[in-house]
Length: 89
Image 1 (cartoon, rainbow, N blue to C red):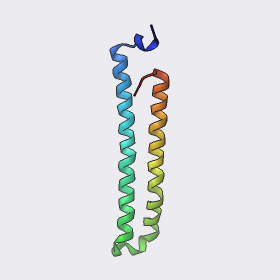
Image 2: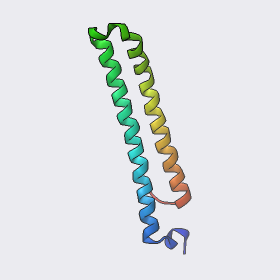
Image 3: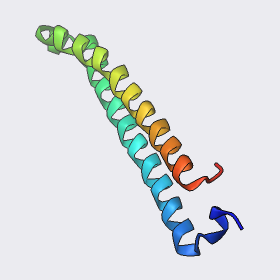
Image 4: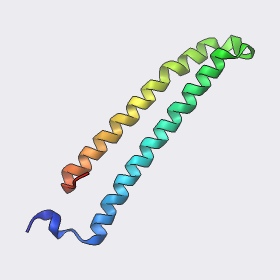
């Protein structure tokens, strides 16, 4: 009998909840990326905000960093979950 056979239904559900929480966290990073990217583009495109051009460029530079942090965290946590519980995806 392997270690995965000894997990109860409650344990499996806890693992699934952890996986779903990890995905929700990534989606929060992704939403933040989209909002910051959109705000930066809007600032650069609208003449009304011409004095904020450097802020718009800063937002455009920060947005991919946020996305990369979210992706890194998603895969790192997924790897940790799979390592500790030896679950298949």
